[in-house]
Amino acid sequence: MPSILPTPLRLGAHVLPNNLFVAPMAGVTDRPFRMLCKRLGAGYAVSEMVTSRKDLWNSLKTSRRANHEGETAPIAVQIAGTEAQMMAEAAVYNIQRGAQIIDINMGCPAKKVCNKWAGSALMQNEPLAQEIVRAVVEACRPFDVPVTLKMRTGWSAEARNALVLARMAEDAGIAMLTIHGRTREQGYKGLAEYDTLRSVKAAVGIPVVANGDIDSPEKALQVLQHTGADALMVGRAAQGRPWIFREIAHFLATGEQLPAPRVLEARDWLLEHLQDHYSLYGSDSGMRSARKHIAWAVKALPGGEDFRQAMNRLDSCEAQVRALSDWFAALADQHERLPYLPPALDAANDDDAEEQRLSA
Ligand SMILES: Cc1cc2nc3c(=O)[nH]c(=O)nc-3n(C[C@H](O)[C@H](O)[C@H](O)COP(=O)(O)O)c2cc1C
Image (cartoon, rainbow, N blue to C red):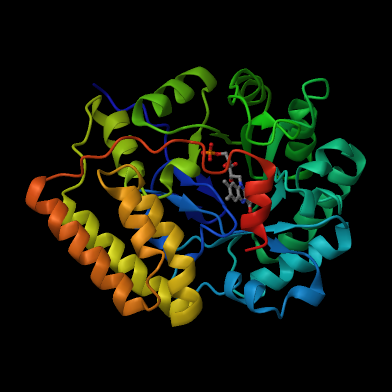
C-alpha cells in the first residue's frame, strides 16, 4: 500500500520530519514529554501555553515553560492572551528565548483563560482576534519566525465561525492552522466533528492540521481521509502512550499495525522520561508531577490501577523508579509485549479537569 501521509510540511526555514504532531497540553507536554514523543515518532510538538502577562514571566512555571535546552528543533511556543500589544511582546520574548515558531492559542476552553478573553473566547470577538493575529505576525516578521494558530470550530454550534477566522488568519499571514473539531461550548464533551475541518481545508491555501479524538492508527487514517488535512495532531491519546505516533506513522505508510512495544522497551522509555522529568522539576516536585505520567502509562495494563494507588503513596524519586522497574519486570515475565488496551478518552472530559491541570 502506498503511503498516504501528506508530503512533509515546511514552516519557514523548517521542514518537519513528518506530519504527526503532539498537541500542546498544559501540565502534560512539558519539554521532557515533548522530547519523548518526538523520539517515538512525533514530527512536531508545541509547548504548553505561555501567558502574555509580563508579571508572570519570571514565575517558576513560566520560566520552566520557556526553557528549551536540548530540545529538538523546531521549537514552537504557544502564547495566550487578550491584548494585541502584549501578545506581540510575548512572541518576541519567547523568540529571544529560543522559539522558532510562535503559535497563538485560540482554542483553550478553560474558564481561567476565557474569563480574561483569551483562548477560545477570542473566537467570539473576530475584530480582536484579527488585531491579535496581525500584531503577532508583524512582531515575528523581522525574526523570520512563522506564526501559527490553534482554534476550535467555533464558540458554539450556532456560532461555528472557524471558516471566517481561517480566511482572516490566512490573509493576516498565518503559516498553519490547527483545528480541534469541537466548539468552545462543548469543552471536551461529545465527539469531535471533522466536516468543519474539511470545509476549512478546502477554503484556505495554508496547511491545516486536524485535531480531536484521534486515538488509534485507524482513526488517524479516517480523519486524514475525511478532512484532507495536511497533518494530524494527537493529544490525550498520547498520554501514557507516546509511541502512538510511530504506530500511526507505520499504519499510514504500510496499512499494517505495528506490534505493541516490548514491555522492557516501554519500561526503558518511561525510566528515561522520569529522569528527564526529575531533572526539570527537581526531586520533590518532580516526584509528585511524575505520578500522572506513570498512572497514564499503566492505566490500560493488567494490574495498573492497583499499582497506581501503591505508587501514589511513595515519596521519593528512588522509590518511584524502583517500583516502576519492578512492576514492569514482573509484567515482562508474563508478556513479551505490552498487553494494553487503548486508553479511554475520559481523563480530561470536562472544563474543570483541564482547568485543574492548567493551574497545576
Ligand atoms: C490537559 C490538557 C491541557 C491542554 N492544554 C492546552 C493548551 O495549553 N493549549 C492548547 O491550545 N490546547 C490545549 N489543550 C487542548 C489539546 O491541545 C487538544 O486540542 C485537545 O485535547 C483535543 O485533542 P485530543 O482529542 O487528541 O486530546 C489541552 C488539553 C488537555 C487535555
